[in-house]
View (cartoon, rainbow, N blue to C red):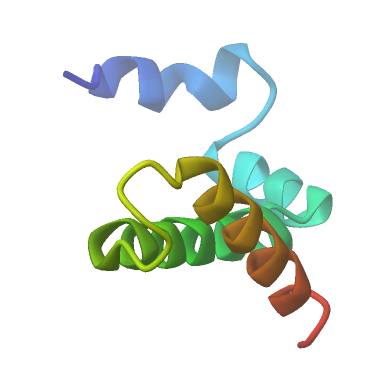
Length: 77
């Protein structure tokens, strides 16, 4: 469970608030690259795993295809 007292004192003792943490993540590209990549990877991998297009034991093929599609999708805004 989240200790609300810790969150309230975060800005006092650790030099910043939750807003600063989110700004830092934005600066690092978490919201522009990491989260979209993870969402696409999870969706595509789940679909390929469920459909079993390449057979029962094609996890490596599914991962390779999913990585390629997810990384290609990140190059477009």
